[in-house]
Length: 81
Image (tube, rainbow, N blue to C red; front, side, top):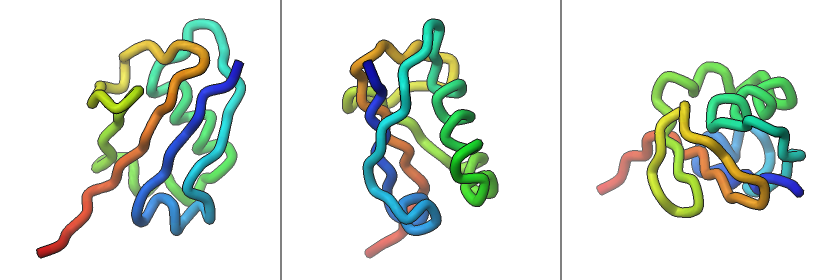
């Protein structure tokens, strides 16, 4: 099974995609999935310090496990008014 990745705002712009899939691997965490995504899109590295993560619509930390079939959202800071 795969992990669905949702990308928002500047992350989506830099990657050229808003949604993609990565193969699930045993022992996946948010950080491991994110790092596999960075191998594919190294231009996202500069965004790492400010990213928030949501797993199945719940905010999570980098060390949280990511079960197969989950949806992981990478959310950069956004401004607006």
